[in-house]
Length: 82
Image (tube, rainbow, N blue to C red; front, side, top):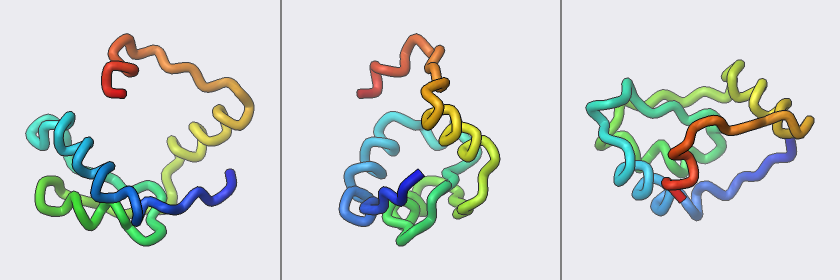
């Protein structure tokens, strides 16, 4: 997968949306899967227990499935977020 980057520019927006739709009492924390400049994570630490990691087996599998056009979303409420 090519490096997409750019979360620094969108970090304020992304973190705002996440804080709006995710109740911190309902999750264990926030995992920043693609560290880079930590554009989202630095704005999440006031609300969530945050972890930064560039290695995550599930995300590697997700990237492979997307590349191979095998990724399917099965959750009925997925598009309601957008």
